[in-house]
Length: 205
Image (tube, rainbow, N blue to C red):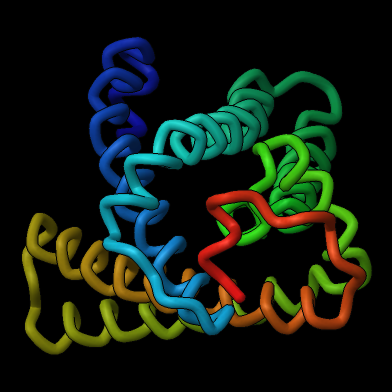
């Protein structure tokens, strides 16, 4: 991927796009199901939430990836102070993404649009970003450690090692989705209500 981005960025992005859309579809559907369950409601099928939200989820993911790639671009240009600028940009992108990380949970449960949900997430996560850092980092660190251990013990070739790593990272991502849903419901119960329910939000009592 690194070599492809250097030689032909447009083709690399086009090759990455189908995977981004597929991941967005699945994560939107799974987020809908587990969040409604966490709220005590009866969840619909995964496809309902996926079809309703995956384009917005894909757009959001693409925006975040673009922001992090800007930091990588700063690194490649190597102008004066590029390390400071790229590091500051990357930290700011990660911090902002964590402040608005619950937008999909909020949008599904409270029936808000993407911008309104992002604003509400930003408000709810004030002073709580460290909680999401912990519940995001712990599963990913465990996944990385397991993948490295298995690949080392099995002496996996490079191609197989890549897929082993992807398998564990995907499993960790599923755990993080569930943890975010639980965190959202706990934070939501501590915060004032956002407003009247909409038909989509009405599934949850």
